[in-house]
Length: 476
Image (cartoon, rainbow, N blue to C red; front, top):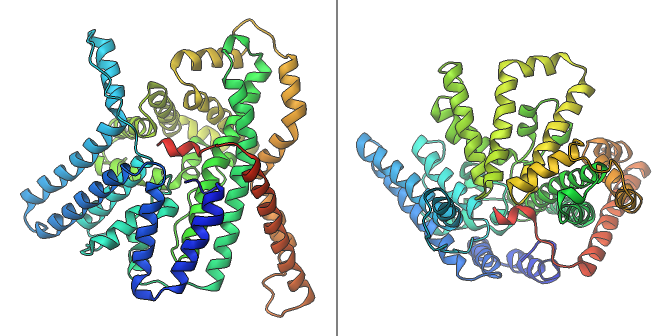
C-alpha cells in the first residue's frame, strides 16, 4: 500500500485517524500496532511473519542483554548472536540469490537459485531492531519489557517500509506517553502534503525521463541525452526518497511522534562528506554510531581510519542491494571520502563555494550511474557516452525533444532541490507568527493554506491519473 495511492489517502489513513482519535488512551498503541501490521500485510501477508520473527528475536535479545549485563562473557556471546541472527535473516532474504550466482560464476557450480522473495523494507526494520538491542547494551536506551510496544516501534507504518531509520531512544518516551496537539497535527498534514507533492509532481516527472533514457542501450544515446537521463534520475531519487521521508515525518507528527530529519538539501553540499551528512541522515548516523565508531573510527591512526572507512562504505553499498553495481557505488563514495580526508577536503575548503559545490555535485551525479544501472557493462557504457568516449553524437533530436517537453519541469525540480523555495515561502509568510492577529498575519496564514491546498490538489490529480509507480527505496 503506497502513501501515494488512493487506497491509502482516501480509505486507510482517514479510517486509522478516526479510530485513533476516537479511542481512549489505553488502546491507542494497540490500534496503531494492528493497523501497522495490516498496512504491511496489504501487499504480501506472509512477509508479516518475517517481521514478527525479527521483533520477537530482538525482544528476547534485549531481555538477555539486560539479564547478563554484569556477566561479560555471556553478554558478549549474546551480542554476537544478536548480530549474527539479524544479519543471517537479512542475508537469506536479500542476498541468497546474489551469493549463489557468484559462487556459480567463480567456481563453475550449478547451484539452483533459491529465488527467495524480498520482504518489503527488511533492511530498514532489521537495522531498527538491531539499534534497539545495541542501545540497551550501551545503556543509551532503556529495556522495553512490553513486546507490543517494541512491536509498535519496529512496525509503525509511517516509517516501516522505507525509513527513516528511527532510533528507539528517539521515540521511547512517546511510545509510552505522548501528547497529540492541534499544532502538531496541522504541521504533520502540511509536511505530508509537501512530501506527496515531491513524489507525485517532481519525482515521477523526472523518473519518466530517466526511465525512458535508461531503457535504451548506451550506444544509441547521444552525450546530451545521457546527461539529461542521469540528471533526471538524480532529481527523481532525491524527491522520491526525501518525499517519502517528509510523508513519514508528517504522519508520525499527526499521531504525536517526532522523527528526526532525514534530508537537508544534500545537493548544495561543498564536499562528498557533507553530502552524506545531508543525504539519508538516519542511515549515515546508523553506520557511524554502530559500525565506524566501534571499529575505532579515526582514533587509531590513518591506516586504521582508512580501513574503517572502507568497511563502512562497502557495507553501505551492500545494504542498498545485492548487486556489484551497489558495491561499486558504495566504494566509489568511500574513495572520495578518503581522498577528502587525505587532501581533497582542504582543497575544497579553500576553493570558492560555488566551485566546491559544482565539483561535489558532479561527483554525486556520476555516482548515480552505478546506482541506476542494472549491471557493470551498462554503467561503464553509459559513462563512456556521458564523457563523449563512445564516438557517437553530442546532441540529437531525442535530446532536443526531452529538453523541450520536460526542461521546465526539470528546472523547477532543480530549484526545489535547493533552499530557495523555503526561503521564499518563509519571506512571504513571515507575518504568520506575529503575536497580534493582524491583517498581515491572517493573510500569511491564508497564503500558506492556499499553497498547501494547491500542492495537494495537483498531487491528487497525479495520483488519480498515474499508473503504479512505487518508491525507489521500497526495494531496500
